[in-house]
Image 1 (cartoon, one colour):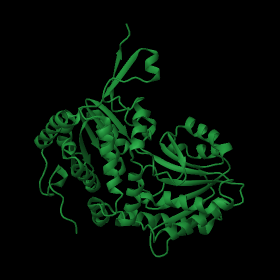
Image 2 (spheres, one colour):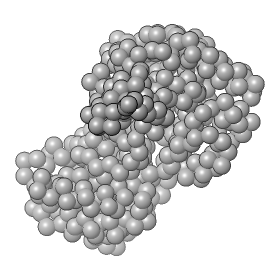
Image 3 (cartoon, one colour):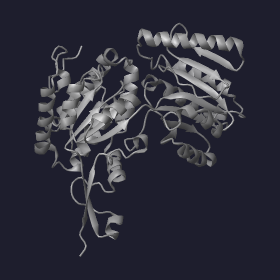
Image 4 (cartoon, helix red, strand yellow):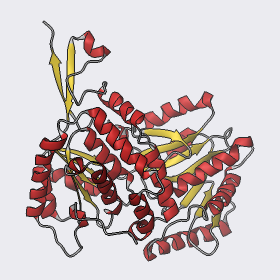
Length: 455
């Protein structure tokens, strides 16, 4: 067992220590004072180096915070140690100096925009420079158990030079706390501009105290939660509601020598973070007319998930979640016995994974925890009609298509409202430059000042 974390953050306090609005208010004001002293004048290059250094530390098997995450994480998060290791490796491998620099250039047009008035080619055409400034205090309201959104929110807030208060959903602060402590170990003064807290959603007095001090509130959660929060926030609000994802595989790409690799990557998409993120696939749509039928693909995917289970076992789940999977399996067992257009494959002796094949292309939401649908479809247009129930609520589509078809399909998906298309196998691995829900990641946080310095 690792040593207990020191009480640097509110989430480190013993469970019996209750928070009050006064404590939240004072914490926010302390964060803002620390920002003025330690963060607001830090240059971008040094922050990028610090963030990439912390990320590199997390990839070291002997790094104390990583070891603690893998040792205590299964009990704290429900993910298996191997699933956590895979997820942390994938995430922190994407946080490098080059990629953070690319993010700044993509979002702000110049890597120095946060440091001083800067100009790029377009600015020079208008004899203009511009500087971007972040909010004084940025509040994050996290949702769900996946740590990546909290990690990314903290990184973006640091680049924006904002003091940050991260309010975690009940029971989900373990990994964000460890990340905050890893920043403290690297640069205590920068970590003094960051707070991690945890309380049950709907604690309006605590939330009102936080909102009263915040210049920008970024929140993730259900659509109802986002709508309710937006009514209570007086300043700028960024809400990210519930989203679902699916994949589409063309007839050409499920045939030949590339099929084993594609199956492996498809299984990784299902297994990543136990299918609990908005980017996890609910359905694999497989195009008909190829050498491998959609039903055959489903059977092979089941074999791949079975092979993956010892390497990356699914974590523990609640009794209610287990019962939901068992109920859903019973339903499809009856349906499969009555129709050749439905088949089911399940993990032996457990609910670790489930594959359902249906000829009907109608979108079906999964009950998650590695429960995946495979459905057949003649073309993408049919799929989009069949997925009408989630129109404008699809985050990511994993696409496996030949080069001569891919661009046209991406265009069709974009016009339908999909905001991210990626390769199968990368659905839960967006780059740091990802435009979440089609919006600028860092650009959404900043305010611009143009300096028109022409005579």
